[in-house]
Image 1: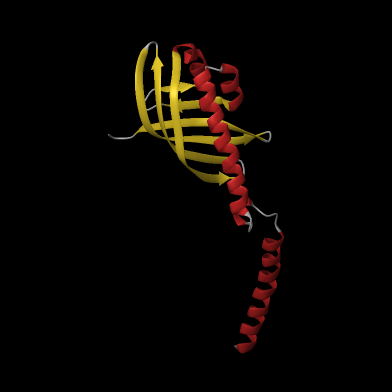
Image 2 (image 1 turned 180 degrees about the vertical axis):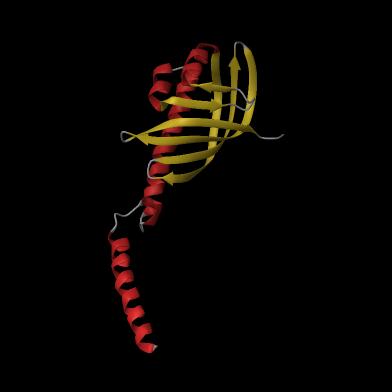
Length: 162
């Protein structure tokens, strides 16, 4: 019996050690590198800057910038539960004005090397077709990296209860 156990143990070790070597030799992923925090900090800085550019583009009613910052399949859901795709957003832009805004309290969730969700608090004053309002929301923007460029694919607001 001990001889069978010894043979089985040696067979097991012969299988396990090469498998462990393969795990250690695989390409490093952002989530398992020692400098993953540093990489995530860099990505968060890039995405925060892009988010701020998007808000400035809204304030300036800059359709070209919004188009450049979003994917073709971009979707937004606003605090009033309305939903709009990129073409719809660009069409409503002449009637939509952001007169003031503040965005802060950023946090990022890295989904993988090419996708991340940025959450933040936004307060802004706006008008649509002459009707003014003030919003205080928790917001999230999902960014994807396509062809090496980070783009906003999804934006959602949830109103903060007063």
